[in-house]
Each structure stands twice: as C-alpha cells, then as structure tokens.
Length: 381
Image (cartoon, rainbow, N blue to C red; front, top):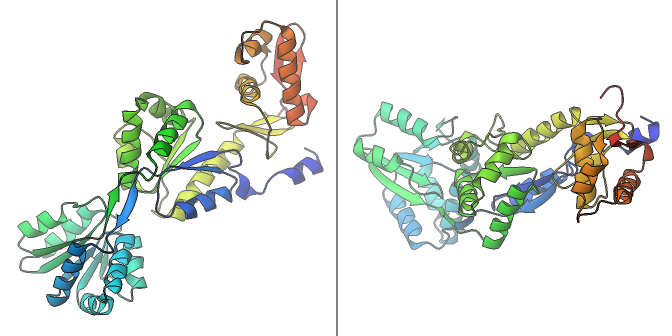
C-alpha cells in the first residue's frame, strides 16, 4: 500500500464507515447515535416505543405524599431514569426536599449500577446493589433477610409490575408501588414499519437495543409485518447484527432465536465499544485487494477506508465479485445482476468501467478474456 493510500485510511474510530445502524430507542438515542456516528456509522432512528413520564400523574404524587407521611423501611429502585424522574416530579410539586429526607433514613436497594448512580446523584446512598440487574436477585436477598412487617416501597420501571410487589406482600410486607414512567406507542409508527422493512430487505447492518420492552416491541412489529423469517435469517447469517445492552434486553431476541452482541457491562458506552469491536474484527477479515482492504456493507462498500460512490447495481456487481474471492464471475452473471434484461456484453463492460472509476483504481477489477471478471487480490488475501 502506498504512503498516500495509507494516509487516506480513516482513523480506527471510523471503522464503522459505511455501516447503517438502526437505533430502536427513544431515550438517550441522540447520545447513542452521536457515539456511533463518530465511528463513521450512518444512523436510522425508529423508536419502537415512547417513554411517557408521570410528572403530573396524580397517582404518583399521591403515592409520594403518602410515602412522606409514612416513611418506608426499605426502598427498591429499579431504574436510574425512573428514580431521577420521580425526584423531578416531586420537585415540580414542592415535595423533593421532604422526599429525600425521608428516603435518607430508609434502606435503599438498587437494581444495578445505573440505579445506584441515580441514587448517588440525588445525594443518597444505596445500601445494596443487585449487580445482575434483575428483580429476581432483589427478591431473593430481601426475602432471605425477611420483610415481614416492614414498609417496602418499590419504584417500578416503565413495563409495569415485575412481581416484587406480590412476593413482598405475600411475605408479610406492606408494599407501596410507584410507577414513575410508562411505555407508550411508537412516536412514529410509519418509521417503525419502514425500519422493519429495511432490516428485512438488507438495508440495515446493525440494530441496537437498549431495553427489553423496546426489543419486544420491535420484534412484534417484525412479526406483524410478516417479516420474521427474513429478519431472523439476516441476524442468523451475520449479514445484520443485533446488539443488546445486556441479557435482560436481549431476552425477547433470544426467545426468537436471534443471536446478540452484548457488552460485559450494561452501559451505553460499553454497547458502542462492543459494536465497534465487532466491526474492527470484520475489517481484519476484509478482502485485501490491490487497491486496499475491501468491505461490503448492506448499502455501501468501503475500499481503503473510503466509502465508494456506487449505484445499487454497481454495489451488487461488486458484492458478487467479492463473494467470488478472486475467482472469475462470468459476464452472463454480471448481466443478470444489472437492471433490465440486457444480453449485450457491452452493458457488462460499461458496469465494470463505472465500478473501476468509482474505485479510483482500474486495476481493482481484471477482465478475463472470454470468461468474465475478477477482483485483483493481493497475495496476503
């Protein structure tokens, strides 16, 4: 590779150049999209659900007042965003200071590090954290210690009850439930349907999931569109990647046989690093051509770090050449790929000429007389 082409290669952070990533979340979607765009990805945003905060919910405020009047012995915080929204709602009604004073005297249990972070941000301290980020672990620990006669308050997530109220009540606790936000319908149903169709037709390289309800809603949209086999097939053969922030989020996907990439820790930043790592590995497996490394994405091709200006038919021809991995692709096969039903060999020659022009290197595709065309690979390929 020449010094000039080496200099033209993108920085490592641009390893996702040419990748189209579907973001299915509404919450923190901008943060996730920005992080992936910095790595070169193109973002399609189609939230599967909306998040409806209960800032003015009379039931939540009434429950908050009751909690202040009758302080809990134990507070279970299930989500960081839910706890922050609860404090904000209390503040909007002039109750935040009194609420935090009451909670400071309670034993606070957090369902995972994100919940603990929100608790600390409010000036409180979590007494115990469920590192598995599951309600089942919280139930197991508290029930083993005994909750009979205790006042237990549970801040629920948007999906509603998760069974904690019932098991604590059956164990003799007096339970208060506070649902701070709930999941609503997708903000743009047409965009959701379009995202499902794009995923099935091969226009999406990766789908990012950040919540179990969101993953379930997106997969339900896939099923309702009659595209489950196509979408699961693309996930299964690796042409499209499902990335989930953790095992809980991945559960609706696993139930449908979808393999997922998951970070070691359930964080948005870790999810980005996991996706980037996947494509860094994909780049090491790219074809080494005389014009540089070649990667084929769903809607683009990346040669020596640059996205090629190809038409859909040009990309299809290049994909066929790449799949042949240096073997000859017959001229008839090229004509089959091109739109229309031309049998004129000149049409194939024109398509190959345009491909060479887009690549900026005529040596990339070699004409094999009377046979067809092949990519010119390096010996290391």
